[in-house]
Length: 252
Image 1 (cartoon, rainbow, N blue to C red):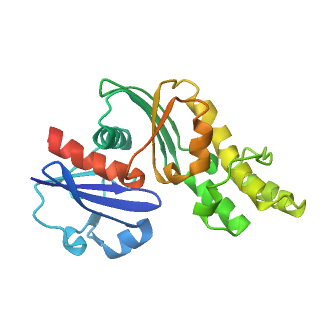
Image 2 (cartoon, rainbow, N blue to C red):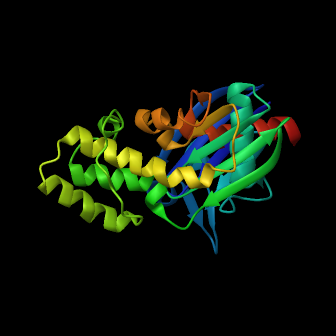
């Protein structure tokens, strides 16, 4: 059995193919490129599997902002919460955990007990706790995003609650001569501070971190203050697409 999972996110589209319970292929492309190069339009935007060079698919599941931009005669569209939870279960084997998914433009926190979603919270209104915030601040500092994630000691205080105003505040700190390590740590810590209130009702032992920000070492370091085990999945950015595959193989 071959199952296709597509996570049509706000920044990137992630694609995974599962064959008899094992991921055999995965790829990612920017959302703009995906819609331009791999979709067709005939009164509605639809993913064109022939352009993706994907065939012999038995089941297909989509999630993300663009999950309905698929041929729903073939695809089962599921919400992102369900996709990421099933991805977390598949990648860790756990049935009891807190899931923190930090995407480009939103954050999802989910409590899972015995494999069932029992509570959740979302932040879709502000980019200051999302991956886009880190990208913008790395651009201001003129350093690679991956390099910025290495620093967490002695963070400079950044108090602005708005992503836009934070850029101006950061520029002010640069002008004061604050060294780059403290500036990077300050950016990472400011994102953690915005996550903390969202997660205050989600206490637990095991925290699975997914999404692009799961690769940020500093943010995970700060989260260790609040959780006993910070669990990094092998494919944090493909978790939604993998969850689609696992859902398709298990329940369709």
